[in-house]
Amino acid sequence: MATHTTRPPPPDWPRISSAVFYEDPAAAIDWLARAFGFVVRLRIEGEGGRIEYSELVFGDGLVMVSDSRKRQEQRNPMPSASPRAVGGAITQALCVCVDDADAHCAQAREAGARIVDEPTTVDYGEEYWADRSYRAEDPEGHHWWFMQRVRNPGGDAR
Image (cartoon, rainbow, N blue to C red):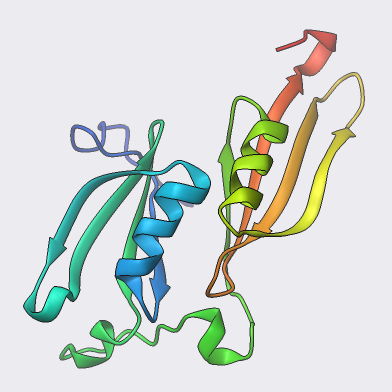
């Protein structure tokens, strides 16, 4: 039987966060802030400007942007790669809730994001919800979904 904790996470940390790996994490951090509206909460640079650690926030969500090569140097290496390094394959896609999917998409497009799926409203039925979402690809090939809830279960508009 699975168990979970009921203790709160550390202050200013979400219950779940993700790390995303890039060949050029410094450029990725700048691009994610400009294109998708992430706010850089912490950026630790080492020798030559190499990103040692970073935290980017979007509302109450947190993403760590890491150097795909750094983890290979650890005693117990983590096999990490940018999609660019593995022919475009992805092993995760992140979903971020936004206030206005269309406006967010326009901002991302303006910053050079490749819009894979244009903003579309999907209605899952009266007893569920409806979302407006789009999918974008960043410069190294990570896929990001951005969604706006447009109707809650039972028909309540957001």
